[in-house]
Length: 381
Image (cartoon, rainbow, N blue to C red; front, side):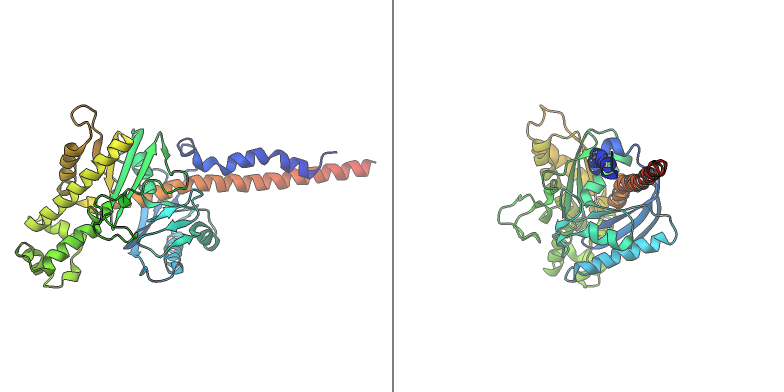
């Protein structure tokens, strides 16, 4: 006679498929439930949270500063939970997606290493899922941004896309044929930590000369503050703007002054853009994508940054003049790309969660039918 164990065993193959559905993103996102989800973008300086619908529209957004990295990881987790619970008061949240500025393992559970945060092998997904009582997905913030741009922004229609996110540091992502390429261990795309200047500036990752030390928000601010601290004549404009408080110099301030015509700020953005172009040319030689999408907070400088990057890219591209050139585009979703992408990826988890619940109900219904049939057989005997 068949037993209930036999019924459950027959479903094990389907359960295996269920566990791997998240890897088949291109097929899955088309049939994921059209429900609102929360996306969280965690950077070195800010935590942004928003409710996003199935079309990539932001229904509500909150933002707060990232807690001091010298504090325990729980402090950052507390901040995330507070933002999600705040949004849940006004929206029906079905899942939460986290875009973390760090290396995330292939299972998308643990943040292995975050250069700008105090996370070391942190089981972020499990911790948050236990506290929020909804499905949680964790991915690298650049992967989330690339997914958003491919789904809703500048990368629509591209089969081979590379995303570069310029913020506190540099993040990166590779997307081919509708799938994010995470690598064997989940940490592909950390372009910001390619060494471009041997023995150069020290990076928070521990190495010297990383690309992000020459083309990022940190690099931009560092150069401006060094010129101001040296009382350079070219820095008088920004010194006057901050009334001598050099520590108040920030990336958005430099961009604002550059737009107003400050010569030093324009030159600093050009320098950052040229380093950006050199790195993109190297990536083109290795990956040969059809499109580079430039996102992150620093990309708000637009052509003050992108134009020098395009010029440097063309000058340093291997085989220039004899090969097709990849398109370089500014991200259309701006600083919200990581948040939108994390929310959209979380819809895949919401789908899996719903299926898992349905399977659980079906399993109990099968057991009830089996028990009833067995009682009927015993009674008739």
